[in-house]
Image (cartoon, rainbow, N blue to C red; front, side):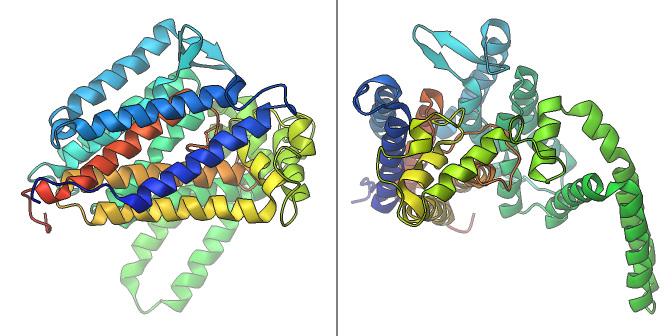
Length: 418
């Protein structure tokens, strides 16, 4: 019994259920009443990549329990080299140089970089003596996450680069002070308020709030300096927002943010995808129009319909019911992964599995958010559902590695309290 391992059946069922919805959705988004069959076209390729992920999943379960921990850094280096290679020999697709052409297939290294970075993050944090109070340890973590982010930004794929921000949630779980996350959220809030109301109005409001706050807490003079520092930082950052917006974001990125904040209406330009997406999802009503019966889906009104905007197909053909089921499956899967992480006996495995859960959470939140118009369109796939061989294979490897780590947890000699 000591050498026996058990795969988590619930996590496996949730993974397979989401992937099956993905294959069906890609088939519906790309078929035209019989022109394609399930095994042809993009749905056929999606099925092939899904089967490939199952094959590699079996291989992963045949490997030694400590294989990934021993070769973590080598995996990270391999995927970083692929990111560099794509800059040299990659092909441009939709304005991003992110793919390596291999025959009739295209490989996107940025999808696998998340997998590789999780190994490096788990290795660094699980080392004896690691502390978020140690500057050298923080610098190491910053380096292993910022290197892939930087390489992907150079490729022109800002959406994939932003996914690496999900590691901040992992760092928080492992002991990073929440002040860093609050600072990030605060800066986002200042950024949005400045774009909506201008730096002048924001500065006046910040100063008034400072006076009001200090008036209510005037007996505690220790709060004055911190309060002044926060307001001063907010005002300086607010004054810089327009410059950053104009000079560091591309024109289409600026327009997407402006459309999301309702600063401009551009239903035939930058806001076209989101507008059509909301029409498609809204037209699905409660129970949807039925599988293969989506008029918006069949009319190809939404660009990238089978990739970034695949949720539109689910919403139109399956309605509120299927949309809710899909979201519930994701929530269940993410929570199950966090549970698997919490019961891991080795710190390394805990961090790796929570990295997977955090990355999937970020993908789902942003992808579904952008299809319903509450997030800017940044172009990241819906995990296991959006069409894309690299995405489904990378997530398949990621998920089966996590399941393998959980299945062999009883072999670990490390204390549960590590």
